[in-house]
Amino acid sequence: MFSLAPLPYPHDALEPVMSERTLHFHHEKHHGGYVKTLNALLSEADIVPDTLEEVIAAAESGGNRALFNTAAQVRNHSFFWDAMTPERAPPAGDLAKAIALQLGGFQALKAELVAAGVAQFGSGWVWLVADHAGALAVTVSHDADDWRGETGATPLMVCDVWEHAYYLDHQNDRKGFLEAWFEALPNWAFADKQYAAAQGRGKKWRHPAAA
Image (cartoon, rainbow, N blue to C red; front, side, top):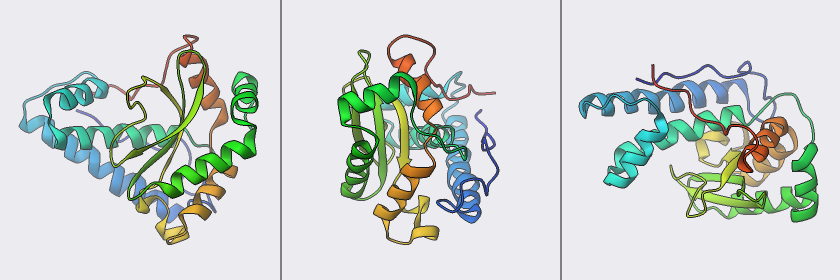
C-alpha cells in the first residue's frame, strides 16, 4: 500500500505565498485523504501494486475512473510538493537557456503560465513540460488528469489551481496566487533535472513505490 510522504520542508517554509495552515490542510487532509481512499480502493479490488504509475495506467485503460482520479491525484500532489522549494533561486543551466530561447524569458514564461492558470475553468493544474527533444510548453489539465495529454511530455514544474491550494490565503484571487507562487516557490533545480531527464540524461521523477 501507499503512504503519505512527509513534506520536503517544514509546513511554514512556503509562507507567505502558502501559509502553514494551508499546508497542513492541503498535505494532511486533502493529499492524505487521497492516499487513504486509494489504499481502500486497492484493498477492495484485491490489487497489490508495485508502483503508482502502473495503478494509474491500469485504471485509465480499464475505465476505472474512481481509481484513476484518486491515484492520479496522489501522484500529482506528490510531484507538486517536490517541485517547490523555500530556497528561492532563478532558473539556471540548460533550462534557463531554453526558457530564454523558446519562451522569451522568465517573465514571458510567468505571463503565459499565469494566464493559462487563470483561464483554467474549474479545478486542475497548470504545468511546464518538455518533450524528448527539449521543446517546452505550458499546458493545463482538468481535475485529476495529468500533464501528458497525447504528447508523452515530461513535467518540469506544476502549480495546483484547485481552490483548496490557495483559498485560505488568497481567497478567490487565483491570479495573485499564481503570480506570487511563480516568483517565489518553483524548484528550478528540480525542474532542470527533469528537463535533462526528458532528453534522456538522467532518471525522471517517479512516485515512491508501494510499501
